[in-house]
Image (tube, rainbow, N blue to C red; front, side):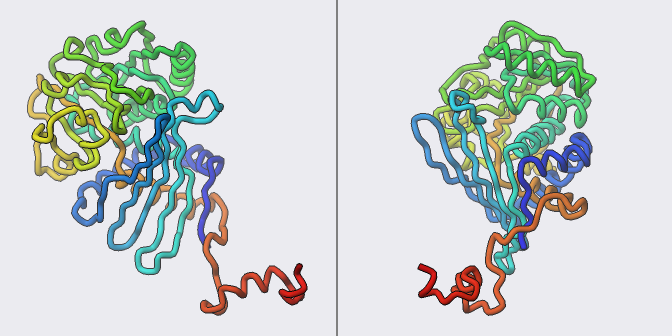
Length: 349
């Protein structure tokens, strides 16, 4: 049978394990998976775009396990009282194709995106980074702040969003659940002023310029999370030109990331190269670095494996008949007979 983890079950799992412990362990798992980059069958995600959003399928596999995520991005979903991002995914055994795990991935995506951001910053930001500006205070923001506090030692955050309610929500949650010093500012420029790390996580599907070159400072690391589909950017082209740019999977980021606005000859480095030591990453304290993050299937693979591990060890979730378990594998119709009970099929009408 397949283990099924719904949103409540995953929330219970994170509460029982502890968000910080889960993030710390996921960071190790994700780093290890990135370091075996060449073992994976990889592809850019398949996307169905509309005028109001995008629906995507993100597959990946190694020799033993296959994973996929279904995810959408609809910035105007608030009018329907729905999240802008919703996701679910599965993990299957490569040898048999049997689905071992079916899980919600909306909450999980918030966790895995934050861990991926912090993992990248661990090799791209200055080691003494202590202050982070956050432009965009939506659903991803708490996870980003907690990951950077617990995994990188960030101690102070500066918040900005055009939505005052989102800022108030984030400030309230951070003051309740972290030891971060929280400051609210009145502009994106103020959020970037004097910080070590700048996280951008805006939602609008637009070719926006949230950060321009006048907001840059020596040694800044930009964690660009919000530009994640064609026609959606956050950084001015000049920011990219002034920075060393790092990506998850170049063929996908060329289409979806902030570098979509750059020529194909524009040089970037994939994160796995830094994590394996094939590329040095940051080379000086004055260098400006950008992690042009769009989210990659390997990160979901890592997340699904860790969710599956804890779900089994803590017996969280439920077992479901997602696919048939037959006494006679050639008698699929027998499932209908079993549902009919003793009645002959011709009498069921």
